[in-house]
Length: 150
Image 1 (tube, rainbow, N blue to C red):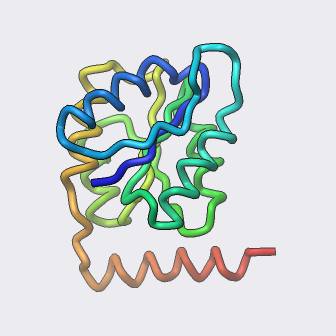
Image 2: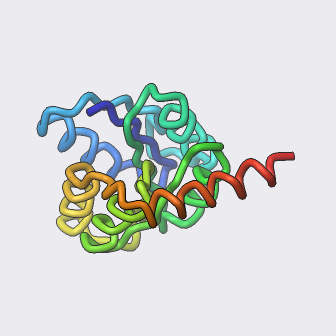
């Protein structure tokens, strides 16, 4: 699977660890930055990850910042992105199965490394259910996005 990954300075170390983990598990990973732990802005990297996913260059994306919240807000501004802030494997599974989430948002300062690694494995291995009710709901999200595009 092709995965885009990015972070600001607050998520830099976890992003690098996840990049290496995903590559070791056979994924193709595009690291869009940050390239150092020097101060940087999460919206820049969340947009890059979101754009890669929305364009089809990446199947899924991961953004990491201090809490995951800012990156999630920024990634969700990219049309076609369904970013989910996740703190546990169950939510990772359900956001994939029910919401077809395509960008995972994580907080380096919030969630422990072992938990994050499990979250990433679950998020990457879980497929969308394709259930009619979930397809309908995702279509409604897309409709809101289309109506609100100014």
